[in-house]
Image 1 (cartoon, rainbow, N blue to C red):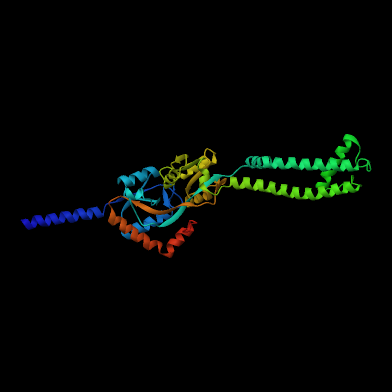
Image 2 (image 1 turned 180 degrees about the horizontal axis):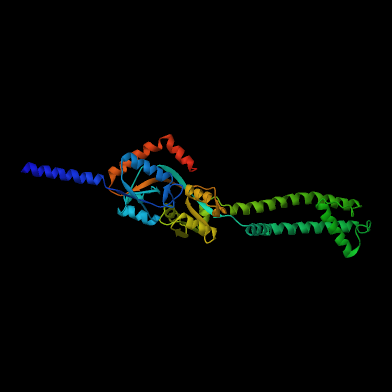
Length: 356
């Protein structure tokens, strides 16, 4: 009798264990091209391919469940889903609430801004031209022209009245001669005839040449500085501006830690980029490969520009329900084996990606 009960007990344990191993995993995802692409219910992308290979090799049964990113993240933390196949950044805060597979891709964050239209570029140019230092230079140039114009008239008015008339008209002749001489136009309608007049002309030529060269350099510098200021290369310059990112993402955590004051959160990348296109925000900050792929594939976003800056290096992994250590280890081992193959490099290349 005891043997029968023992046998039934062992069979029950065996059945329950087998049943547990055959449980269907609930796998959550949020579209994040090129890692997860969901077009009319047809799933593809780097992470989809990787997960299907892992599940096939480990003989895992699963069902896919599409969810908003923030909800999916909470579902993994609460154990409502078993795995998230999104490219989740492995952070110290997240690892306290969920397990992670071995990292399969490294990336970084970047900044997207809207390209300036023609009117904005014209305003930028006008602003540079009418910069205070620039106007001071023109005022000084006018003073130089007036000074040498007066000198030439003073020296030439008596001995060369045909070119430099007496009175107020002669002052105009002197100014006209100064401008023509300094700009090297050289009409030849007015020229000094006296020794002191020629000396004054030499003074204008040499001093004017040096001054105009400096003024030209100042103009170029002013325009260049404005252009460089407009094309920022440091994410810190956006701290006072209105920026956007994906809700509950590691990019949002990064921005808050680095004291960004005006951060708008969106449910997805497309929504945020559309807000940037409508100029409701000044910049959108998120993972570089996802932003680049989306802008390249969507012609309506052609006027958005990815700035050449890299920060917040991230390592992607699958999120796994806490307490599923054997599953976590099995998935990590298989991922490691797959990404060491040449096939993994081919898959990345198909979607235009390379490891950093």
